[in-house]
Image (tube, rainbow, N blue to C red; front, side, top):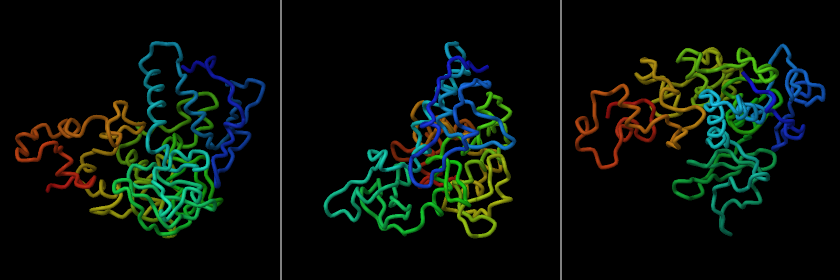
Length: 336
């Protein structure tokens, strides 16, 4: 059960997100605080269709759920909320004016871009980071984190071409979104009905989906393809839990986005989908790539007849199963 007594008043300034251009305020009937308690302290009014409320609401409740009880499930909720806040998903797009410290590029007087030009950031900066001006036009250079060099970048309208997968609650008609970054409702769906009274039947839990549909929640962005009109490189009509194939023409590739590679592999045929290996809320132990366990431990759970010392006795020191079977991070899991 929820411990509503632990919930606190959240100012309307938090609920109405103003993190940068393109961000729309939540419907006031959905998110505004009202003084008379109607079942919770947020005053979120149930309506026929769920709306986006933002991750501040999700995290506030889930961190305090069952507060004070020595309950394993409660601890799981609190821990996943804390860990998720530090994942790359949350930082897939950043307001550079609000958080300039999230820019990973190095600047000199000779740099092709200067810090003052950057108003919005695309990417957490694990591999590359791209930059936009105030109108969300992509600037002509991106920063390669590995080589620590500037690289030419194609100029596009990032609001139309990128933000569907770098924000939550994207609206193709208005070209606006509820909040930057891939946050809770990107995978669980809009949460106003759930937040109104904590009814867990009013929110999608992807773990209750079939393995194909679970993978499609990830595949809505981690894929190559176009919508059915061919005009957008993302599935504009997809909602978590849907059949992605009905709204998106997916390109199966030997090398490309991870879902496009995965559906070409034998792993998916054997019901080994994304969350078998990856922790969607982040790795509690801090393991790279949000893995639930170190690489070899994960592989050995199924391939327990192939110990590294016997299977690859000549592999260089420090090699893992992924060194040979996932070159460059490939999710085709090919036999070398």
